[in-house]
Length: 264
Image 1 (cartoon, one colour):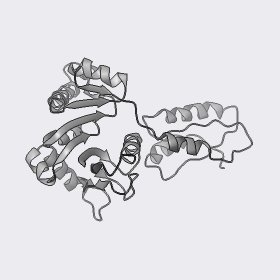
Image 2 (cartoon, rainbow, N blue to C red):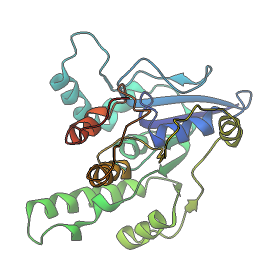
Image 3 (tube, rainbow, N blue to C red):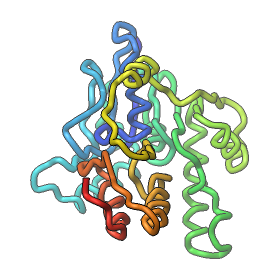
Image 4 (cartoon, one colour):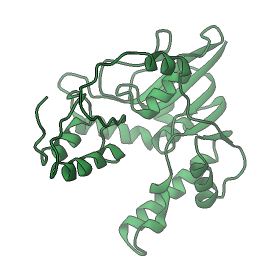
């Protein structure tokens, strides 16, 4: 049986990265793979991973009573800067360690000794492009430092996995990396999608525009508010299916307060 360790930001919210990771890991044969996950942050007790997948203690646990964020962050950054101290937390040996993104997950994964190490880049690399900042600025200097650190970390991995042509091109443009790169599609659970597509959902008897996505400041769902504001000038509009418990709900609500929605 192969022992795998995945290092990811969180397993609590079920954002795109976590959902995609869960789609992969939940379907892996537990007779062939023993899977551990190290979440850097824990925001809730819930998780989207199946039983049998072991969740290690997070580096920062926001669910603790009397949580001291300042002290927790101090310990976190101390670990990030001290490979020996971090290695003392991970006592087991793994056949493969997988960092589920660049930045901190890849830093921590690079500290460990394993049969193989893989970094699975789930986002873009734009924040590491110093040309987006003004020449000579403090911002540009900080980006250049982060770029140099990430370049050194990338060299510690046996394979770099990307999910898009854009990331593959960015690796080449920003880091000159063309070898040991593997492009895979973002994972989806086709059976689950087909099953959900057959569900019957009651719809209101009026013109309906549907959008599905996370309500976040950097997602295109927020553009719907701009459209709604224009539509409001000439039509009556209502809002359906909004989750007040979504972690990013405040972002949506702060923007949507500018629109007088009809209550439904």
